[in-house]
Length: 302
Image (cartoon, rainbow, N blue to C red; front, side, top):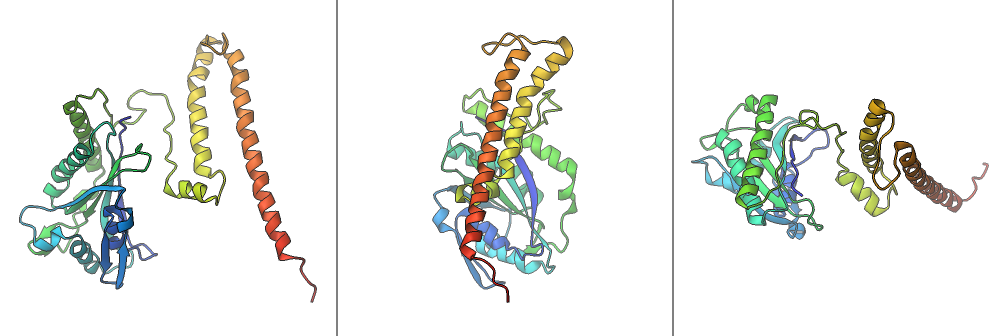
């Protein structure tokens, strides 16, 4: 199902010494060498998930700007601060209803018009997950404009304007909808918030890579992000019924009782089921901890 997403964030070294070369290699599924740290980052093994990748540069850009290794090493070498901002990243959801070629072309055309034509150099990478449910594009773009054969001495602060981000979100929605129309599809996306669209629903949070990895590795049986998503889903199910009760006292239902009060019995049974699952997970965690303590043996008085 087509959905809207345009997430923009700044990639910086921060205090952990993050490498933009590593980020570029991971997103493109390639092998790059960080000259500054004399370290090789090889993510070629994940190339199956990377459907396509390309570098887009302004007209007349030097040859090195089209080479991923040279481009991002030049970016790293040009930033001296320990917490330097190295790149701007955009994450775009692309409709699964479109072919991979159309997905990549739509994202590349958008990047060319909205980023590259403004002076950024951008590396565009299309990712397909194993499930095929979340096709998306990573765009890693430079913080500085090209000035002849080098980057400009000053960063383009106008790219940080919130109003520009609003326009970028709108233009991406337009690009996606145009691609869907050209493909003969009826689906459409909307960049506006639920509130602006008059939809009384709590936005569902993303689970995220970290929480998903914790669950898959068995580090945590039920990560907080999973709990939060379930909570929001339950709140959204209840909201229309609560509004109707507030306005009319009782609400007619279909298939699960004639009134809210009958349906509430079913609803509360679901709450009890979820609570039971949490209790089981907590007891399992306590058992694991207890087992670890027993393997240590008793402490000896010295």
